[in-house]
Length: 227
Image (cartoon, rainbow, N blue to C red; front, side, top):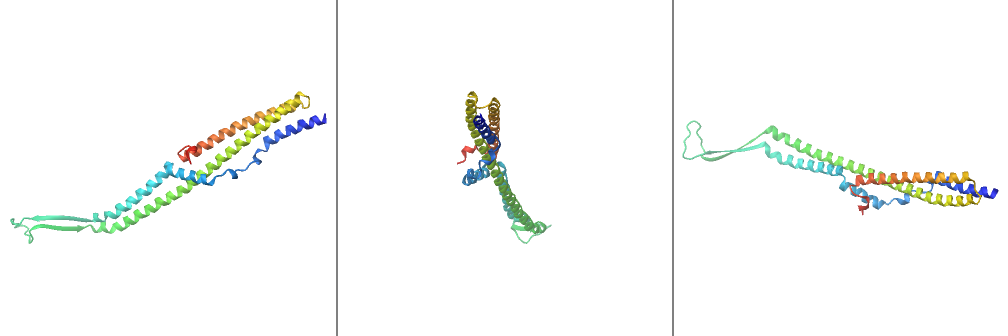
């Protein structure tokens, strides 16, 4: 009788151990593929709309510099006067005949041009700093989501393995119960533990799908498409 109780107790303890001690059985570190992670980051920078927006802002700022540099000519105004040789103007007599070219300069506008160019160049720097800041942010986001996905996968593997082990233990307890070597209470507790593991597996599957979806949202493509 004592031997029977030891067998049943050992089987039940193994099931309870699988239920409570899963997190100590696996590490995420071996699952991390840093080369693949760099590809994920590059893909996110290529496809994510906010990244494209930051690059467009840099391009606009650079265009403003070119525009400000070319606007130096706006301070100058050119005009011409045509005086025919055959005409005689008694009111405003002129010495020169034919075409006369004159150039005027708006001094205030001319003096403000260096400041406008300098301001445009500073705007480029601001846009570039904002782009660099967001690149760091997107890198951090991709890493976090990738690690969350790996953690969800590891949890799912553990839960799947626990169910396989639990099913084996339940079959052994069922056989022991039928032979009278285990009580119904012990057998029922094993079944309950197995059902709980089934619920944990469903939760782990949901967490894996959610983590994958969150990562793909940042990547802009399916995870399977990243080579």
